[in-house]
Length: 158
Image (cartoon, rainbow, N blue to C red; front, side, top):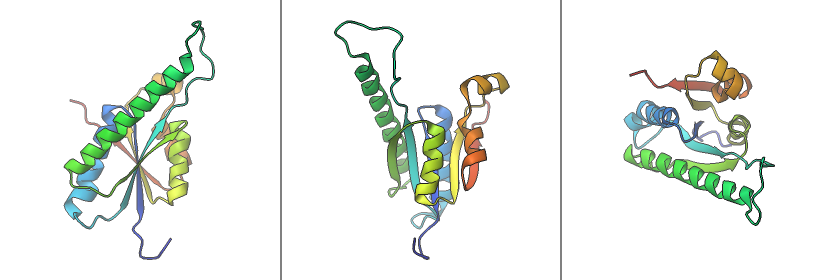
């Protein structure tokens, strides 16, 4: 990486409102006020879950996994398209957007390593301790495992 290169900011997005709020907040606070010379190279990453390796039921003549995979690809494409629209609405035209298949926790930590990111931004669903224990928390995981500064953006309660 050249000495004159901008530091990299990775923003993780999924199909939640909290995720898009975090993206908008980041653009408003780090990119819009500095246009057209942004302080960071912006990489937006969506992790597409892998289709389950087995489904608990079988329908004769129907490949269930392929339908699940098509649905997951469509969701990921919609997420990236919405992220692109948000960026364009804020006059951020040079963001890199990518979809990577796998678990969001690992995908985001891998993106930090791959791009040598200075900061990782994620939204917070605001789960309580029980839901977090059952569902897992991407933001909690990346704060402990990403090798960069992690900013967790919480959407204010109404």
